[in-house]
Structure formats: C-alpha cells, structure tokens
Length: 75
Image (cartoon, rainbow, N blue to C red; front, side, top):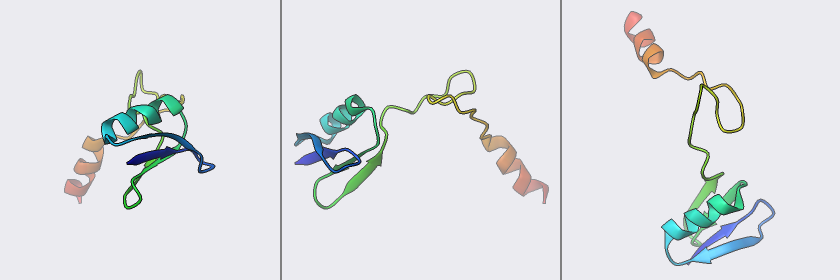
C-alpha cells in the first residue's frame, strides 16, 4: 500500500497502485512523500514543465546541456 504524506506527515491518500498514488500527489500540490514502508519517493509532483524559459514557479531556467558537454571537450 502506497501512502501519500504531506510535509507534516499527515496521510493525504493511499492506494495499492503507485501510479494512482502519484496522481494523488499531484492533486495535493505541495511537497509530499510517497512511501510503501520500504521505499520513499519525495518531491512536488506535476512541476516538470519549462515554458518560455521559466519553471512553473516563475524562476528562470537556464541549464544548458550543450554548454556543459562542450566545456569538458574544450579542456
């Protein structure tokens, strides 16, 4: 059984299916812990989109993989 807990440790949902538990975590819309008693998955779910150079919380996203790879080759 997967439990979805908020930062205070309150159970906000539970389900035997991890995919459904992750969908529940998206509905909580805050930092959560999903656990089955052995494994823990933590984070704020549903914030994986960068649009117009900004993260969902408005912070500028400036990470660039090409420049990091190129830097190692320039040395």
